[in-house]
Image (cartoon, rainbow, N blue to C red; front, top):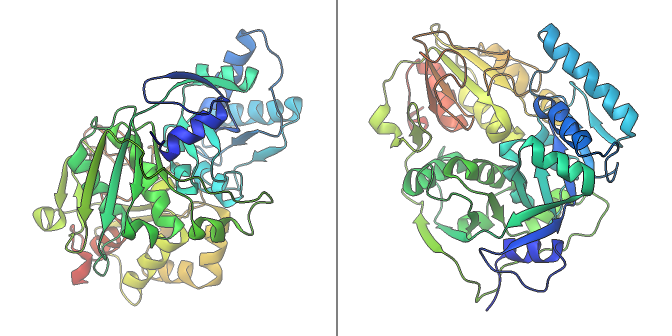
Length: 418
């Protein structure tokens, strides 16, 4: 019996020729990542285990991205203590407040390559499955064990294969695909499963779109989201990493717990309604809902391609006077490219507020907080109560195209009509 790509990666990492779902393996971690919110807790856990130094100072990457730059004395203190830790531990890779969102920068800088086992003390670490890696989020205590030993126990997950076929209509985007999938599978329908995205639509999709899909695997309970590495992966990584790209693919006779087939040729833009990510409706079902704020950014949709489609829709138009449009590029690289190509100018002229790269507006940190009674439309990944401000606010999730169109009209709008 063959193995899936996820099973192959876990087998390699645990020194096994073969693994199967349900087995417990002790695997060697290739890369460990922490943002500012979890770094101190993770190192505290490591030291409570009687270990003073990380197992490998070149395999630990730390970011200051969630509250960046520091917006309170507490955040400033945390940042100070992390910088001190980085120096004391002699860590080779540290990205300060001017770098961007961890999940964007980690792949952007070539830290993740196909076949790696990547853990991060942040739930959206599954984003890096877009590189053909098994990437997953872990808690601070588990991360402490990784920092101490370089190893971690894993239960080999069953795999759900999602085969996507068909060509998307104009202004229907990868975000619409993943929202549709989550609506079908449910918020807990893939709990501790690997979600493997495949099919002709995925093979033709760029890395930005694949990252959007994998990023939201956790929103249906997934242990990881993953796309088999191919020429698109190799092209993306060619100038970003120094190692050889060795794609790992699922065997033809691999066993899947479930196969979901989806033709997206007639797919409408999708919107996740308050207060659950799987409360998904077509844009036509919610069109006309008034919005107070639109946020375009995050590790889900803050990439260059997302800003590019936003600028195309906003060019020579104005943001509705009753709407605040907050745009946050996912990294410095994204920001600079958008600046060079005139996208930032287009966004500003349309009336948008463009902030420095960070996670602040996504998790309700320090940018774009919603007040009680307000309605936000966001391209990020979660719409739980209180996620982006007041628990009495309402948050809808959409693609950048839908968000941009809605920012112009002041109500949720089908981007195919703008």
